[in-house]
Amino acid sequence: MRKRFYTLFRIFITVLLLFLAAKLFFIAYHHTYLKSGSIADVPAILWHGLPLDLATTGYLTAIPWLLLAVSVWAPHWQKILRKFYLIYAAVIAVLLSVILVADTCLYSFWEFKLDATVFNYLDSPQGVTQSVTPLYLLTAAVVIIAVAFGLFKALLWAWPNTELGYCRKRIGTTALLVVAGGMLFLMIRGGVGRSTANIGMVYYSDRAFCNHAAVNPAFSLFYSAGKMQDFSEQCNYFDETQRASLFAHLAKPADTQVPQLLNTTRPNVIIILMEGFGGTFVGPLGARADITPRFNQLCSEGIFFTQCYANSFRTDRGTVSVLSGYPAFPTASVMKLPEKTRHLPGIAASLQQAGYDTEFLYGGDINFTNMNSYLMSTGYQKTYGDTDFPLEQRRTHAWGVTDRITFGRLYDMILSRRSTQHPWHIGFLTLASHEPWKVPYHRIPNDEKANAMAYLDDCLGQLVDKLKRTPMWKNLLIICLPDHGIVYPQDMNENNIAMSHIPMLWIGGAVKAPAQINTICNQSDLAATLLGQLRLPHNNYRFSRNVLSKSYTYPFAMHTWAGGFCYVDSTGHTIFDLSSEKVTAESPQPSSLRLNYGKAYLQTCYDDLGNL
Image 1 (cartoon, rainbow, N blue to C red):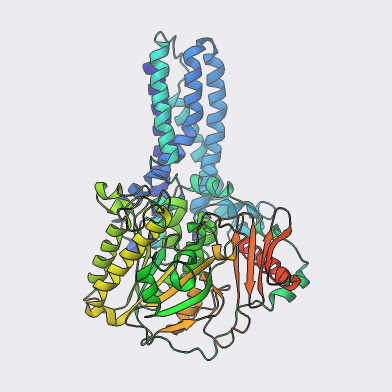
Image 2: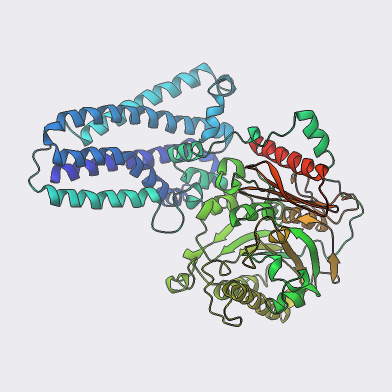
């Protein structure tokens, strides 16, 4: 029994120590990326990167675990099993040595961790090799061979050429191996939380190098490879000439004669992403007046966008649309693709470049759907999730910390900025208005969804009331909009345009005067519209439009979900099913132009994502 567990432990430790040693070498090789060459960051890099090192080690130890488990019940197969292990060890030794050395060598050229991007160079490796000398390549090859040989010898030591012996306590040994397998599974999964292992779970710093150094390159490569798609080949409805001609009518307009709706160009900015808070709950958009009375009242006090539409149907996609001004896709979540998100602009990054401090608050698992990686790569210097709250508060909702508590934390974060001399920005994602709709609030009986939205409305109203009593209100801009709409009432579905119709509201002392904007737009237009008000550049937000500009002469909105898209303009709307390739709803009249615009827009978006 003991021999098998010692063998498994030695294999596990061998691989884990390799990753830690490679990480130290990576840091030493690229030490100039650390501030002042300091080694003070090294322990933090190793500690925060450990979850992915454990996950990858767990993956690589799974095969030896299986072989050892088989040996318990088939002792006469031990020589065959070890030969299989030798082949496996050789493959792993070569594979890991290539990955680890390539990651170290390529980082100074790419400045991101090794991922599936490398496969793009297999057909034309000169794209990589032409930037280095033959001596550099020879040195790298020698190091790869040395690492592979050393690792292979270490793996041979881990399972030596000796008999494991006959196992007398088969059932007990098997039970313990099952427990060990369960521990490996937890490591592979990344723990017991909602999120599985992903790149973002090791991001902890506002310095990209520290985050990159923490990432396990083998995990990064295989994680991104598993999500590889040729996005540029999707939704190819038109040839390039037709697509370009149609999209020319939809392209981002220039800023001209933009009315100034704010008192200042440097307000403190809070963006509140209100979970599922669609237009079917908001009185001024045609819903019952009793669900969100506080929000309804605030609509008359701020700048209210009445014709805003959600880009997507999920939080991960809507968040990217809001914070990066980027479109959403039926078949892809950009947030889950760190090799793509690192190229996206971000409101936080734009504000940071203008001298703002940036933070993001969420009461749930901030690593879910790779959110933390996305947030930090698009400009948020600090992020806070459920683990930043006491354990008892993390259990106040099925998804984490309930809104009453997180709104309280948001208020405290705002007050802590009272003496700050430079402007700041906080992003905040709520969560309680999400199934199972259980909230500590009971104003609307027998309607859990409406009551959950009423709870969110009450939390927002109380926050605004408290902020109005502080001097900070004068220079504050709070932007409220949902991540997406939801199915409400019960008969709602994506064939109803109301599903994607959402409110967007700007309130605060920085607002010059109440206004109602009736222009058709998307939540992705927030970036350009906000930055335009702050007189900051936004040309890098290719799909975000300043909807207050006089040049925005063809207002339209695009909403996508897994099965189709909805295209809206002043002539009406067209809903198209991607599977059947048929129009499923349109109003008031059929329009081939609307349909073609929608197709051309989606095709262009996929092309852009493919080239990102």
